[in-house]
Image (cartoon, rainbow, N blue to C red):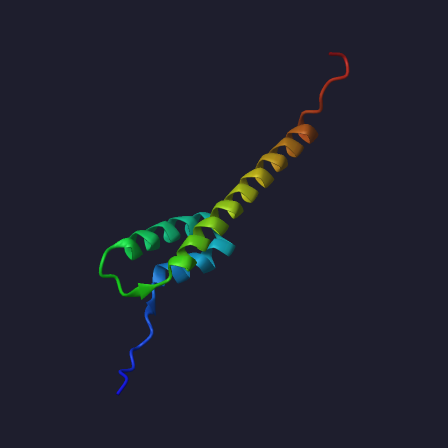
Length: 88
């Protein structure tokens, strides 16, 4: 007779980190890192390593996109507020 086993429970922080990576990327990176650390302990019976990894990847890419957008925005506003003088 075959024993039926329950599927592994998904780590909550991995799932929340993956969702948060799309809205607040820095939170996705932090939660993904914490979830990966939790899942690396021996004897852990939870799944979600892939979710945690992708939360970190998407979070890092989203953070880079937000930072570059902010830098471009600041440079554009600075150009409007302080136009370069033609005499120099």
